[in-house]
Length: 110
Image 1 (cartoon, rainbow, N blue to C red):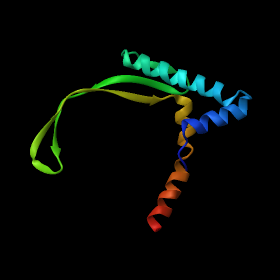
Image 2 (image 1 turned 180 degrees about the vertical axis):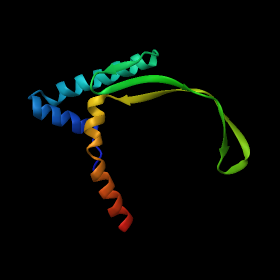
Image 3 (image 1 turned 90 degrees about the vertical axis):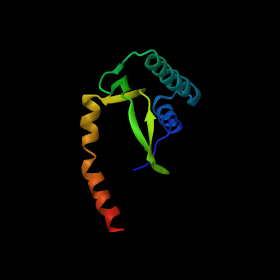
Image 4 (image 1 turned 90 degrees about the horizontal axis):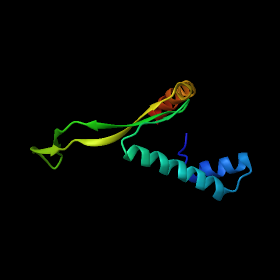
């Protein structure tokens, strides 16, 4: 398994569609910018068969400083983005479980 970057996606989509990489990059970037803007305004973004992005608030809590565990550190409430995968994504991702489990066994053997 590997990490896929935005550039990797742009190249792949460009190759599949025949659009230039710059055209694909512009569409991908504008999509990400629009999603970010809507979330920053507190809106929920739903992409059918992909997933839902929504803003939630975390509660205030007390944390610990690892360098000084005896001292409490207040952590204020924050707005965070949560992603809930759609049905189609869940089904496709679920198929990778045997591969992940097999890799885990290989990693443990090392």
